[in-house]
Structures are given as C-alpha cells and as structure tokens.
Amino acid sequence: MHSRTVFFVSDGTGITAETFGNAILAQFEMKPRHVRLPFIDTVDKAHQAVRQINHTGEVEGKKPVVFTTLVNMDVLKVIQDGCKGMLLDMFGTFVHPLEQELGIKSHHRVGRFSDVSRSKEYTDRIEAINFSLAHDDGQSNRDLAGADVILVGVSRSGKTPTSLYLAMQCGLKAANYPLIPEDFERRQLPPALVPFRNKIFGLTISPDRLAEIRAERRPNSKYASIENCRTEVAEAEAMMRRAGIRWLSTTTKSIEEIATTILQEVRPERLVY
Image (cartoon, rainbow, N blue to C red; front, side, top):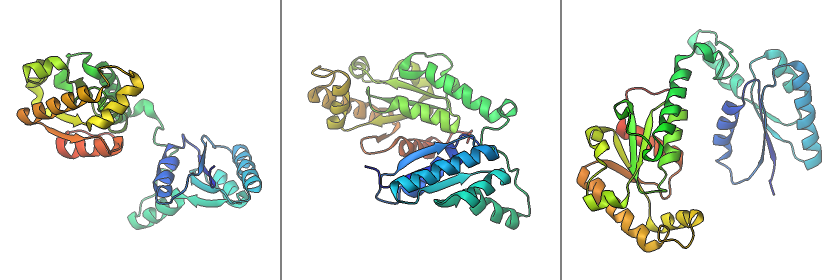
C-alpha cells in the first residue's frame, strides 16, 4: 500500500516536475502513489486539479504532496490559494531567486518542448533516436562513422535500453552490437566495428544475473543456462581486454548510472539536453 499520494502539476508535460520530485522523494523510505496532472494551462483546469488534490487528502486522511512547475501566474494562484496539500513550487523556489541574482527575467516558457518546430536540439534528438533504432542489436553497419558511441556486450547485458536512453536524453547517436559465439571463435571484435574502436564501450554483467534475465525470455534453454552465461561473459570480457576498449559491469547499475559513466569515458563532442 502507498503511504501518501504525490501530485505533479504542470502546464506542460509534467516530466520536469516528476523528474525533480522523484529525485527528492528518493531520499525517503516510502512508496507514494504518483499522479501526474499535465497541461493544467487554464484557470478552469487548475480548479479541477485543486478539487482532485483536496478530495484525495480527505479520503486518505493525509495531506498530499504537490510538486508544481506552473508558469502561468493566474493558474498558479488558483493552486496556491485552493490546494490543501503540501505545495512545492519549484519554479518559484529556483527561478525567481535566479532572476534577482542574474538581473535577467526568465522566459516563463511552458515546458522544455515548447516551439519544437524551431529547435535544432529537438531535431537532433529525433535523428539520434532513429539512428539508435536502426543500429540496434547489430541490425545495420551503415553510417557507423556517424555514431557518437557504439556499445558492445553479450546478449541481454543492457545495450539496447542504454542506447535508447543516450539517444532520448542526450541526443547521442548510439549503435549497439551483440558479441556472439562466432566473435569468440575469431577472438576479435566484429570486423565492422574495428575502424571505430575509439567510439566503442563495452558492457558486461555477472553470469548469475545474466542467466536470470535470459531465463525470463527463454527458460530451460542453453542460451539461459548458467554454464553458457559464464562462458559468454568470460569470453566477452577477455575480448574487451585484448581490444583495449573501456567497459563496465551493468549488474547493479541503473541505466542512468551506466549512461553517465559512458559519457564520462567517451566524452562525445555534442550533447543535447
């Protein structure tokens, strides 16, 4: 059972409010119920949000926690005046003091995705996502010179989710290639990757964890057997050492931690946030 309800109220997508709020909530041993209320961009919608928040507090007998990133001051005032939850206005907390310190008025723009048609960064992000999808799991060798990073590792070591995270969050063109028995027999990286060794980053994983993951996909198979997993992981790590490429274990790391480590090591020329 959740211990409390947390609302994320925004006149945009609510992603900023939820990301920031979750980072703060992670400091507490609790499992709140999350409710995102996006596109609260009119006074009427704000009154509806207030009613929902206050009703939740009455039913649960606990004040909801409310994170907001509202830019429209009329909408924000409705929330401030009517909300009976614990209100945390992130823009008010950080933007206004920065305006005073910098001597510059903020844009008061709704959301990070506003006016995307004119945003080169947004276009670059879409191109990076398309590139990463086209180069997932070794599907294509085309235009590898355009890759910002190339991930290698055994099957189910975390290459695909990491590639997509790098594309979606950082605008990086990330290709990924599985290391397979044929590569281990040759004792060399896939030939198509050799010219781009400086872009390669390896992922490995503990054999026990790998066997668990593979068993969910193909139970009782050689692919998922602990013996096979031990062999593949050992061969992959040996190959990475011989090739002199950087690598890390994903066993206990989140996608965010893996991506951050890769960025520190590879240091691509361009990043989009």
